[in-house]
Length: 335
Image (tube, rainbow, N blue to C red; front, side, top):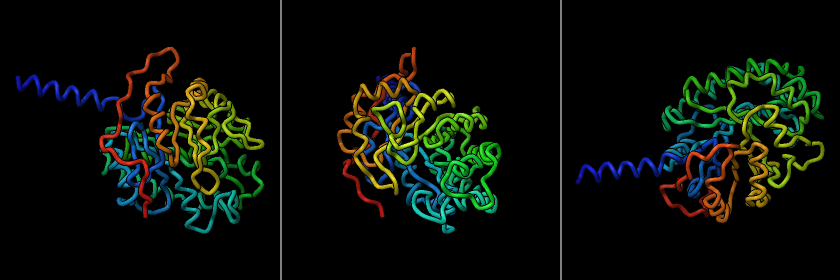
């Protein structure tokens, strides 16, 4: 009898955790990391990395360990090039000058080994805290295309020394980032950035990548439209969700709830509508990350945990509540 109870216990444990975390055939709800914030009913938790030379066990380390203990998938916004630039006097292209659109390309050319060293240190730290068996999603370099020749030509700024040839940036440089990550985390999943301001040139840009190395596309910077076929409502941002799915052939992880400068806002409410969500699923979106969600987001995530994102296929399972530690969603601000 005791043996049967043990078998039943471990079977139930396996069932309760097998389907937590990011899945390709059900919609995935997540949030940005904040120490003490609830992960209840969520599938992933995201963090921005890049502003230190080494892995910070007290910040990203806490996030990785919390994700592991709550059985949610860590998602890494790998903003390493840009943060390295900020450490060397550059700012984002919409925040003044000198910026990544004036000095970013030269920084890559002249400091690439230091940039790759940061990637290696982060990946090693994550491997130590999380292990290497499970997938971790890396969102590689928001606005990566801004350092390219074509990105430079479309910008109102000019890269010192000119942009990096598109094929080199999407090939040599991107591939070295991926190989550095996968050298430490062989099961890592890789995503490329969506820059809606690039318009139809985005299709040409995506064709320069080795798509076998890519698992997803992702948005960064928030301000996305859950109730519209266009990703952003900004002037001259005409790329649609369906465009990206068609051009890259990969599913999309969207984000919202923040804007220029990174400040949180509440403009993500249109995503919390099942009709809108199903329309975006039809366009190729399979995940959503909100910076600072309200309590109703968690409730909506629970109610829509089994939304099928694989056309013509049944979902693998209804996801279980993924948080094993109930924490109030009124989170503590990290120091």
